[in-house]
Image 1: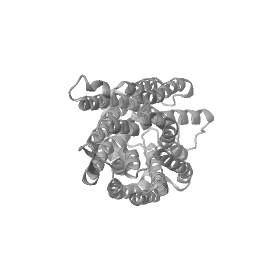
Image 2: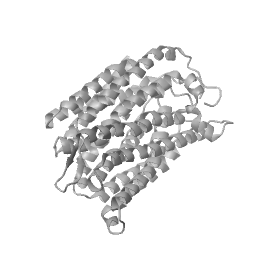
Image 3: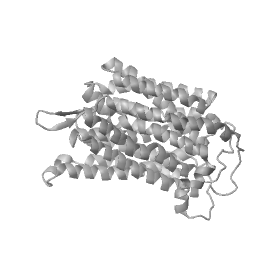
Length: 446
């Protein structure tokens, strides 16, 4: 990637009804599938296979690796072809089919045929999860996110990312409110089929909703070189602001992954709140409303200026969650934490879009996946698992050792979040020089 990182488009682009519809529909339905993968798959494993937190951590890490590979490969290919629409349309259809396939993994059915049914079930879940994550990331993290970058400009990205980042929360609210009863009744096949069906229908709808604003990149370099171009030292030297932002996002995202895979289990098993869907629902509604307002504030005061107070709010929320006990306290603390989460995520996301080299938005999505998903998903859950093993083990009535997440996951997450202050300060220092650079079109491929 070259050093011309500032988009030539600087005036606000019109965001019409069709653009907003495509952004909301594809963003929301995609996040429905990620809610299943990121949260409910962990619950499914916990309730039907094993309570071992290391298995949950391995599931998260392996799917993150598959997702990152897909984003790098599909992102670079969509840059070369100048086509995001086809990857979104066909990708969502295949993504939905693989999500529905989780319902066909029958744990009980394997017990009679194989000696170690637990190990077989874990292997099957991890394999299918990697396939689903590859398809989903190619369609969503590579093609959809690059399309959002192509279709926006710095002047309106705070507003756009303020909406985009609430999609995971809205999707969780929908799943908790409408589909969680299916999981409580053990009707996992129906649960996975409904989500998968919606994702497939969205892929079909994308054919009419999406236009391709990107242009093909004519280049003499190989496809493999395009895939790895963002990992070279020369790319870092040419784009210091981009990589400083990615580093800050990486450390902060590790903090999120310390507790997020265990959050539902923590609320239900440690806080003993059976109506965890209501707690999470109220938190998600309040945090989503705050995020939309925060996106507009971000566009007014600037993304970098917004980042520090957003991080402080997130840290305050983690501290509050450590001490929160009971229904009301969990709602208050959770709202503070998730609002800060949304603010920080939106700021980092918008800053990375601003710093993306022209005609390289797809390749930048691969870097974003490495920084915000892969490395945090490999490191964070294992930090959380270590915290749980030290404080949350007990022997059940059958003499088996069980593990339950404890408040230490929020304390560990807070420590990591404070460490992220160092790269955030670097972002603040580099930002003035980044803004002073000329907004030039690249004269050769990124």
